[in-house]
Length: 177
Image (cartoon, rainbow, N blue to C red; front, side):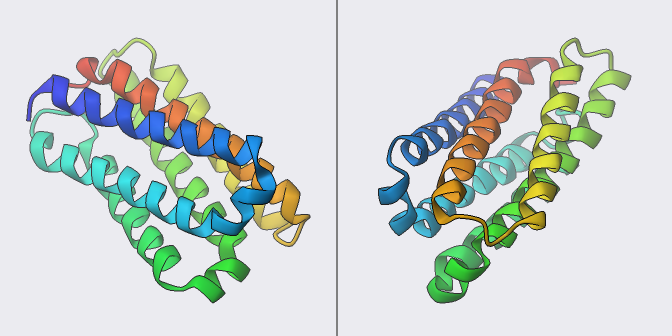
């Protein structure tokens, strides 16, 4: 897999996450009706991108094992979200929080691999990882908060996750060994 293809996949995944977040923010009432479907599809694409990039570049990209682990967990959670409508509606705050928490921790740990390799901009991955992990933890504290607030929070967090993917795509040329 070449560098450009990997970068394009990460940027596309990031753009889709940002678009999903903007939809949630602009139409929270409409987003609530399709929140689990939209979240499931977005998470599935995000996880597949990580797995595809690992498969094509695991010998060339520093810290690629974290991409694989993040991708597998994201795909499994997305399949759970897509296949269990009723349970997902009840458990959505927990599932979303788990995804954010795990993804944030993976990005945080991966940022230290980048620092060790001397990659400039590794601090952005650290900051985004911490932000995502904190957001995931906070979603566990008040899972049954207002439904409207949930749509807004999901929208903002999807945008943050999308930015993390776009940043990863922009800096990915530095990750290739």
